[in-house]
Amino acid sequence: MGYYERGKWWVSPCNYAEEVTGAFNFPKKIQFLDTTLRDGEQQPSIILTKDEKVRIAQKLSEIGVHRIEAGTPAVLKEDAEAIREICDLGLQADIYAFVRNMVQDMKLAKSCGVQGVIAELIGSEHLLQHGKRWTVDKAKKAAVEATLAAHDLGLKVTFFPADSSRADLGFLFDLVHTVKEEGHIDSLTLVDTFGVLSPEGAARRVKKLKAEFPDIPLEVHFHDDFGMGVSSTIAALSAGAEVAHVTVNGVGERAGGAQLEAIAVALLALYGIDTKVDTTKFKELSRFVAELTRAPVSPTRPIVGDKIFLWETGLPSSLWINCKDEDPLIMLPYKWTLAGQNEPYLLLGKKSGKDNVKVWLAECGLSVSDEQFDKILPKVKAKSYREKRDITKQEFKEIIDSL
Image 1 (cartoon, rainbow, N blue to C red):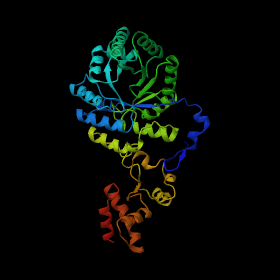
Image 2 (image 1 turned 90 degrees about the vertical axis):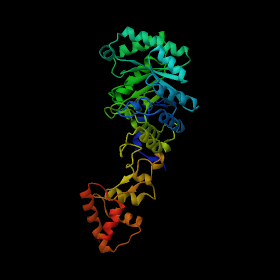
Image 3 (image 1 turned 45 degrees about the horizontal axis):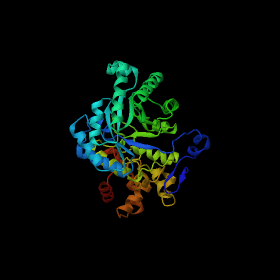
Image 4 (image 1 turned 30 degrees about the vertical axis):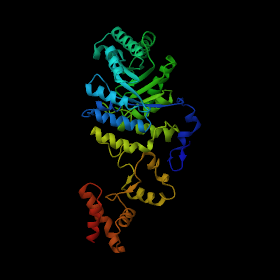
């Protein structure tokens, strides 16, 4: 793959320069763990029913998501039932449950039929002491007992030290070593609970953890409080992390989580890394999840927004008209089909030019004289300015009728 792939994408050649790519340490295989059904549901006002969770899990598996965190069975019996039903579907994706480091939670997760657990424990000394009001010894003891119990039950254990992005490294190393040696860990998650990692900081912490625990696969779970969820996740993967925790549309607590669609397409086009997820179904998946979560997607949301392949302004509209048949990528970072989007479309409004008008006349099957044509754009701009939006086809026809 390269910076230009005809019919797919056209990005900067700088991305593929040897001095850039030579610094990367991407693993041979990158997997996604989608946590829309748990962390996504923790976004205020999102509640997913059992049936909705099952339907979303089916969609995620269909597009090739590798692992699905199906929920927390201890929250509500309906959540446990949803996890059981998801497990019974025989999906291609591995199914995990999110649990506290408590033996009873491990037993409940096992009864749901999951293959593994995401075992959460407070992972920073300050949050453990002042938030949880636990001693370090109490936390270690709970994690050791619970992870051993999970292992004995045949569950894969992903140890999930919350706020580990802010933890003192010595404290974090000691905590993980204790659980690894006295309990059980199959994989470790670097958790940026409050979205405070910069891309450079994420890469550094991943390198430190990989050096300290070279035999433990590393996962990353980042939030988006500073708008860095996607970029920091990719930086962490470039430093050697093997699994990215993501959500559809970036839903999640506070500012949300790392957006599945943006990470997958960025890895493919900007880094030449194919995660084998079917990106052409992203728009369909986004709309489906937005409907069930009742959480509208911004029209300019990367990859899945409704308006990212629209133009109203005159100059880009004209540029698009001139080059779209020769090579649409001259005016696009990637082809709309890569994300399952619709073909670019020209709007008509305050910022539009004469080419926008010509396109709309043709689409509406209308013809006007040269004198009438010169009167259209001023009327369009005035109407758009008054309404504070682009105009509709009906309004355009009314303008033509008024000439």
